[in-house]
Image 1 (spheres, rainbow, N blue to C red):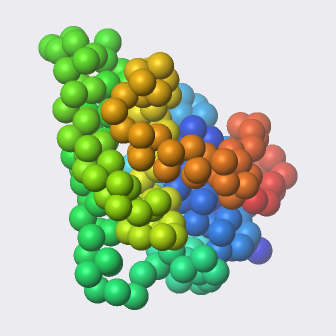
Image 2 (image 1 turned 60 degrees about the horizontal axis):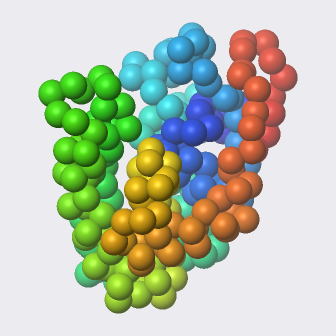
Amino acid sequence: MSHPVLYSFRRCPYAIRARLALRVSAVQVVLREVVLADKPESLRSFSAKATVPVLVVNDLEVIDESLEIMMWALQQHDPQGWLLTDDKLIAESKRLITANDFEFKPWLDRYKYADRYPEYPMEYYRGQAEAFLSRLEESLARAPFLLGEASTLADMAIFPFIRQFANTDKQWFENSSYPCLQAWLETLLQLPLFTSVMDKYPQWKAGDPDMTF
């Protein structure tokens, strides 16, 4: 392969954060846009999970966890300093990302797809998710980004999920008591980096020509 191959899905927050890191690191990849209801067999052959994103670095290395893709890309080149050097900040970054991925994300799924979880109303799931929003709001009341004056891995790994939460009920989010979180999200959404990774691509099928990203 001349370039690593990335299996992605445009709207998936896990795939978004992987693309953000690949783009900022200037690592060029071949992009294969996946339709989740029609996954290519090659994706299944590279990863038993068959979920996006999957980065096929070469014949010997396949990375099928979005955070690991981010770390791999930034280890190649980290021009904006997303990877931290202060041990305390690194530990806090890990805590925030872990809380996002394993505490907030399950409630986000139930909030967004509440009809699939009829045990409770949508508002209940939103209320459970708000524990994490409050934690972020508290951090952002002290500084413009989660860990200080500049965006880092934590901001970029988390904000695609907050974007998804906000889009579930935009009116509620815009009227909610999270002004710092709202401002942070809007700042990141306006970044040329973000808009550049949200271009639309056609579904990839076996035999299609390579499309670099």
